[in-house]
Image (cartoon, rainbow, N blue to C red; front, side, top):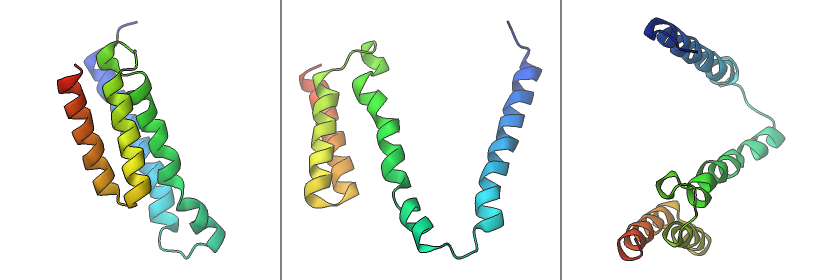
Length: 109
């Protein structure tokens, strides 16, 4: 099935409107209210729950290697987790993981 460029842009517009309405429903309608303590406690863990789901496929099944895990990405992930655990500083862990990835890709290949 092929779609015309008009249909594609219409679909992109619908998705953009839907995304906006979903976000507005949370931030626009209830964003200025005070949440109960149990809601705030659960919201605090949202980034921690989502980030591994975004990063894990890039480490375990990277498109750059045809879906095969490689040592450079696994080592960079371990260094990032280790630095984050030890230093409790997200910037240090990201920069350390990035440096390990680039060094590993240049050395290991």
